[in-house]
Image 1 (cartoon, helix red, strand yellow):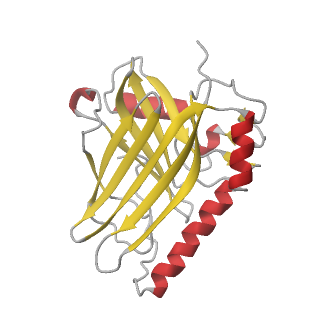
Image 2 (cartoon, rainbow, N blue to C red):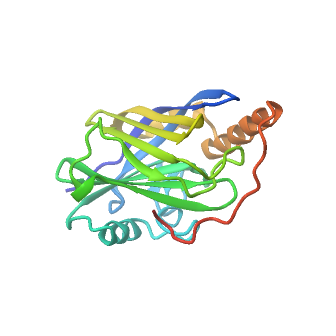
Image 3 (cartoon, one colour):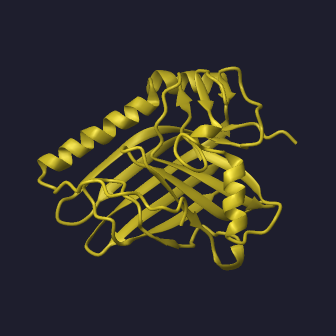
Length: 249
């Protein structure tokens, strides 16, 4: 059975908590793909250049040396996940070859039930770390479940590596809502991704390219813009520490 890729015209929100508050909300464009399929509209490609594309080397494993779905399946098997899970990758695609993705999500399903998520996090320093989210025994993940992970990766130079993440995933047939809470005492932040699922078409890809030209470069520019605003607000800059040796936690 061929799984046609889907388009998520989404919205992301970040809100910093603590003594210095800062928040923003932007539109984003994601695709939801079966990483084992190559089907898609004319303007979308897998592992080759196009208006929009997803390349295996950008996902799964070391940054720039990704192994795609093979890496995700190995990580799930190592964690004791059941055999026969189906995978989907929720990610911002490359546009005209440009790529930067703060976070992508490997979604693992047993039948129609979501049982595991690997959150693949990239920073602007060229590092990557992934967090595996699952319930005990890989029971189905419900929208109300709060899945915890200790923070061990440097993402923002304006936050310490301390505290922990709390993930919630509401993955429905027509809509996706993901919430990430960084709980670090009085500090921390809340980040969300929400959007409606719809078939990926050339028209939707063209619309995304016109609304947000060179989408990955826009993402980087916005990250640096908000970093400047935080600096001007007096938030202390933390130098980049070495990333964790393990690829996934």
